[in-house]
Figure 1 (tube, rainbow, N blue to C red):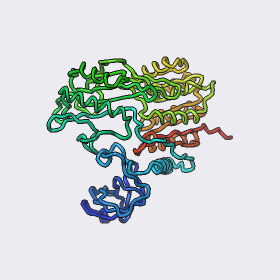
Figure 2 (tube, one colour):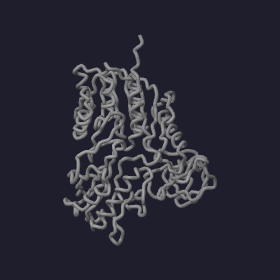
Figure 3 (cartoon, rainbow, N blue to C red):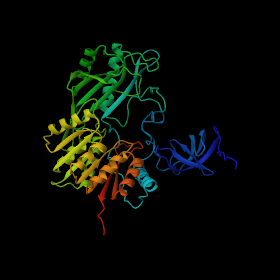
Figure 4 (cartoon, rainbow, N blue to C red):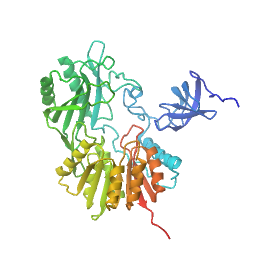
Length: 463
């Protein structure tokens, strides 16, 4: 049987009607059943597309012009939206973004987990879906004449986008502090890191702020062990921005895409800044994982609390507890919370956060949850609730087995990846749990990312 070739060729121009969106936010149009994925196209639109890549079962195209626009299309407020790639959806109205994310979760649950009967509620969005990020990490580069520039990398490259004055999803004050560091460092003659030749000094500028406290931390990442002119930098920054509480020098002398290196020194101010989510105060260090959208984090955690239905007699296990963000919320209502986390520094932060808030009914342990939880089961622990908030890759199957073996009445699964969520929910359904409902929460407006909170209940045996 002759091998069937794709109905299009590279560099060919075709007219497409777009029917759907991929998980990356590209429009999907078909030629004789063959899908082409085209960035910045929206469902219902028709346009002229140049084919840029052809694979066996699908291809990629570039949108040349539109013959018919969607009523959902809006003008992106960002000047570099089509270059940057940090956001994927600024060209889509916000209500449509929320509906699309709900559909994405529904379709993924149906396709991967066969859970089309499970209610997926409308995505909870933000009143103002801009300027929500409390953390910025900007690479530093140089123009041909040596002048320092900061900005995000252009899509699929390590070229910094020049002329990027601001980022519309980042806190405005953070933008200004990055610009202040760039301006002062440039005037002092601190050289930018040259990635290609592995030389120069300043690699990244990171700014973290506490949304509720207005505390600010600046982290200066260098290739070199020394930070030139650090006293002048500190003096000018703290005089300009009195709410800066901490200035940190981080050394990353490796040729790597990882931003922070292993050596960190506080060169001015405090080791931590603080922020509040609800009634809980958190200490945040340069390396701490802390949610970048505190307003929506509160919404997410309140939904997790609602699904957990915790009473004052309940024992709760929080797998992947991080710095204790969810654990400390749960401890406000539970009898006892046990948090597990593989990163020792995060567990130290979690213990400090518990102490900071006077919470004595939360204990934190270093280790892999899939190994610690079976040991707890062998000791006779039977939690009433398990909360799990894994990374994008989802839960290890051993962990899902350990959770099911503990037989908690309720499991609350917080996820940042609908595909791995669907896979894991299927396994838990087959292990004796019923998925009751799923609530998407828009933690990252203008991007394709969506968080979900899912409630699972232990099925009762019927004889």
